[in-house]
Length: 482
Image 1 (tube, rainbow, N blue to C red):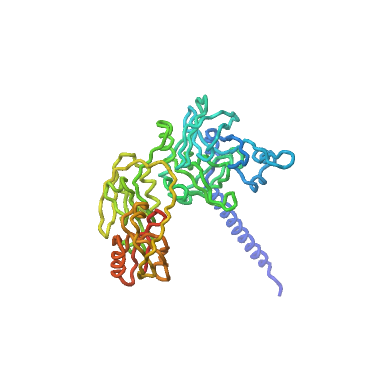
Image 2 (image 1 turned 90 degrees about the vertical axis):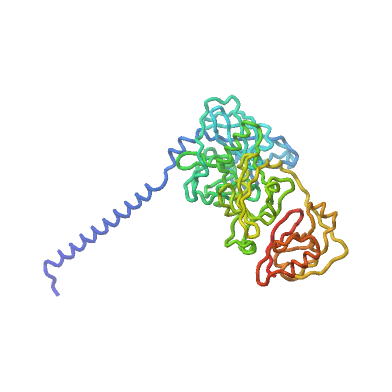
């Protein structure tokens, strides 16, 4: 069929309209991308303003026949440039035998006062005989160790002859929020002034190695050599000291931990002014309240810190705190996880009075405690609990016996029965093991076999009950379903 003259014109109009639509879409998309790009943070000014106050720290330790504490393991050494491998690796004498060499380590730090005070990690300078601080202008200045606090992994250095040095601006870590952008400057693997960025992943993390530091968790790339370096917020303020990483490979795996700057500056001021660090001490052994423990103690949800043991002569004992109490609030702050309590107590001035809200046998109480000073760290040997020849069979799959008076004195407890054997049953399911000493069942004190049997016979059916046991000198609460 022949086409009319106007048909091509209509087709051309469609093409023009289609082109216009496509042009509009492309323009909109590119404009949206530009807006998105403008919404991302630009760290260039922050880095330029703060790099001069960030320092590289290198240390030298005495040579040993079997050197330990090298900053990198063999796998990490292979990732370094050859001259770094030579610097950090061990030289071998003819014949292949390693020769004792001075140990070197490398880390980061930052200047907090114009007269030369520097903050870093304790593990960066631990055991160092010589400390050299290198500034961004390539000056290398010797530094002395003013003091350390291994509990928080903070060390304070003083640059010798420091005068009118650049300093960082110190912010407040208490103002941080999860999801906030943060940035690190440091020397990972010896590469000076490396900048990495990410977000705050979580706050108030408790790590097994340290109960008195509520760590900031981030996804900022932190690697060996970043230790001791600053963590900045977008305002260019230091909010933390990069300290630890969680890794299975020796390198960054997406989880890093920083010491909150509020805690670090408290340590800094004490070391600078007095040469030591004093922390508040309550004198209790606490544990987490899980769902079953919450039910057994009459709580509607898991929260608070369960007191498993009160130490003799401690501030907690003087205040009337008892094993089995659950601390719900400290100085008006609610305790969601038991790990939140130690940092709160540690920050309380020694000799100050703190108010706690506790729940005891379903009753809420207010207790005032005069905070003591945390004792120095010490070693304690686990107590080995023996068996006496005579045993008494008991329900719940347990075989128990009276705790000999000698062991009562050794363990520092009164009464209790010792578990000799655990068969199948609720006790085994609860985690009770031979050599445990049971001192309490369902909030009933156990001083003898008769107390134990009476408490077991009165256990409610189809309900969870708490059992307090002493294991290797440490008290803990377990949950049992009779």
